[in-house]
Length: 316
Image (tube, rainbow, N blue to C red; front, top):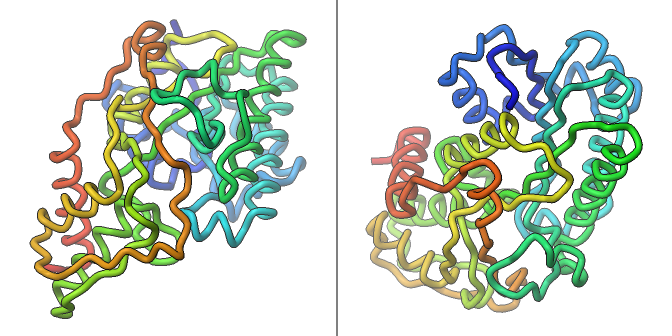
């Protein structure tokens, strides 16, 4: 077990949604603020080898938690397949290679649920990761991330690098990305319904058919899971981080509509893509290997997220 209070921890993407919650989780464990290092993109473009090497040289980490990614919802993935493949592949490639050269104590790679095959049997077991091609709209992103699992496994075998690979399901919570062009489904729906109430609209358009299902993990739970894995897990196998449930997008939209008290109609635009048909993870491995189970009830997590966005948007 690694005592993180004694380590110098780089969090790539540490200023982002999950990164800020991960910093808070580390602080709650007693990790000193000066031991948590967050490289900013203006200083370190980690898609470049020289910048990655300079980050290791200047910050001297003993642990790296690689959260940084270029990603978005279905629309953003569809519009940026080349960029998302290159940026995510390049960042991980350089960071893992420089970790080997630096003799890093622990490398934690955050993967993506998008790496799973499009028609993975539910619940998704880690053993199914290679049993087919990912859903087409996010395949470039998912495959780039999945290639980093292979790299970590190869580096463990050849160089003894203690690199682990985690697969969080879709995250949500306070601080999420609510941008209309790039947000995922929960923040997108919250924003649409709150703005519709404010304007007095009588309908809201929702992408797809609403028949596909998703699983969601509250961001603070995810941060806790990452910290547990960083402390306790040292193995080559990928590990799911999830809440172990699924909900259809139609039921999700109805739930958020009721919580926000939008009285209008939902209009489903079936010309827009649905994405992967179903998502629900088998979370047995995380519980067995490092004792992680989700704790925040989904309705409570949604309530906190809605309240946060209302505060930020100045909505009543």
